[in-house]
Image (cartoon, rainbow, N blue to C red; front, side, top):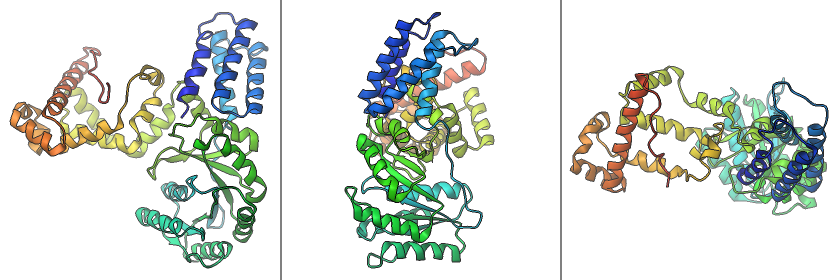
Length: 443
């Protein structure tokens, strides 16, 4: 989402990164470019004005670091101000001393509220909680069915009474059910509308008054741009939310909403939702997001994603096999499946410092992993363990038919795999890093 903004900001900063001395004219030029980049990203005008003023004041003030050059100093300032713009620090959930903790979701139709309910349920379950979902959208039977389907998929119970009772009554009875049956986390999914209206606001207020939630989260679709900021402002008085969930952060929006809502509303962004999978949901970390925008990567999030999917002992064993050159297609398949669980490949690569810029003009095709996986699963166990068998053209033809690919695709995969094995053997013997074969998806 922030690719274009990141490119513009980095272009503005490139002229001062290596500067030994930072002149007032350079600061003016850099801040002017930053201002244009933020406005193009659809950031609120007042927010841009304050941001640029803060950067200029700090860059021309007495702030000095002996460890950094003046050019590096302004990059550091921009990074810190971006983080401050998005809230500065992460704001995590607090849990009730007497369960259940009740969280109410509010927002317009189409912003991802019901999906967020499921994602939040899975998220807190990983924290050791026992969640319950309460369906209060009495205007859209499809929304109730969607929540029930999500609950079934996750193994989380859903309380619903259909569309006849009043939403506030359903919410009250749903939370009571959660308390009586020993659930320690209740998520109330309220109704939305296509636009903000007073009926919606009054209804949300009644639901909030009836269940007295420990937290109210406003769900915002960042793809809607400045409209998301207007929605956030409109919900403030009636929903009295204490935090926001930004959805579709992996979309093509310019990013202005994510950079504006905190300053405009004074409320923190608590969660970020970046994909369609239920697991693609986490606390929002302003400092990490600022680093990603400026191409500095997000190693901490990458490590956390890996720790959730990878067994340490198993990873060490796989590493030894890889460096010895005894890595098989079975091992390769296992690694690919682990990577897929961590999220889109392009998103993972963007978290590695410097790599996002290097791969700017490379088409990272996430579907390519699926095609490679199809070819490997079409191999026999013997072929996966002994790739030399695949030199036989008839075997390559059979695998191609089974995976919906061509014989040339299979032969190319085997060739790249053999090159990788040789490269790893050389590295394992201390031979250094040879030329790396083309990445899957490079065009």
